[in-house]
Image (cartoon, rainbow, N blue to C red; front, side, top):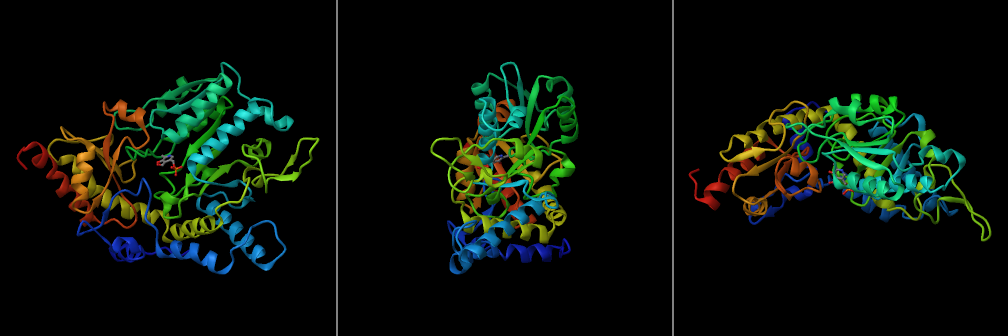
Length: 433
Ligand SMILES: Cc1ncc(COP(=O)(O)O)c(C=O)c1O
């Protein structure tokens, strides 16, 4: 693995790999601070997708011809690269990695499969997942709706109860409450490693320790972690984890679900159809394949999966430590947005225990107005509730402005954003700059 020095030069070169960053918006250079919603794509990822169609396009895992064999190899190589990115390669091959249509699809797959087990589906060993009335699922106040809602629906389906870990004023999940909230009735704990609103990194160890002490499974949301931090799912000791390729410089429509080998083996399927069944009859139940294929019904977005593998390897080659260091420098500058009069950062205002996702409120100005004002200057941020309403309520808001850092952002861009934010209240409210 070649890890370039974390110099401005190395990241200037990385930035040049993103063709979209050469375009202008409203006549101004594009300043893209919306990578937490979706990251831009480097040339190598864009090319990987078209190269797949130009050279090896075919259905995978079936077909006796050369293209099918090459497509299958490329698809499985992508799985291996995704596994490697999160430390899941090696111990069990790559069979702990399931291809999904994204993190949301991964969490829904998991919740549906556990619901199926609760309804009596699957092999005898599937019973270990069965939820009953009175059981508990614990989430956190910081969860994205794509974690909250599948598990809330799973509660409705099984009679389990939802409870949650709160957040501190700095936005971090209250892991100090793990012993009180995670009880012997808890069967699943589903939390994020990094908040998509405050950027806070969760103190996960006490949560995992307590969950496992009471026999609960831990499901981790890695969406905002894989693009920014080194991750090792085995070291984190979680049972399941989901993430999306498009937030880590890969294509849309692809994600991955990590599951501990013995758990995936015991879990019944969630989706049914081709490519996941060994034997199908008219007069008897089907016999399903082993993981990961059991969870990959139908034709996958093959070119995109291959390109997601390329994105995973591209990030690993930069080195996530170097990425974190570069983004820290940009984030340090970006956090100065909190010094602008009338601006409040949601959660941590310092650099520790966070990534470069910074949400803020501009007193007296609606986030959509802030977003449009910045857009007119070529600056792209996200406005709204970022699919995380409970944590916004915790800050007394329904919506906020979010600037999120990616590998291509620079300190100068952070300054441009702050200068623009400083003009918002003077423009809308007539207060002095
Ligand atoms: C923390 C977090 N979890 C889950 C998701 C859902 O990801 P996707 O929309 O790619 O399925 C997102 C996307 O915004 C996110 O930020």
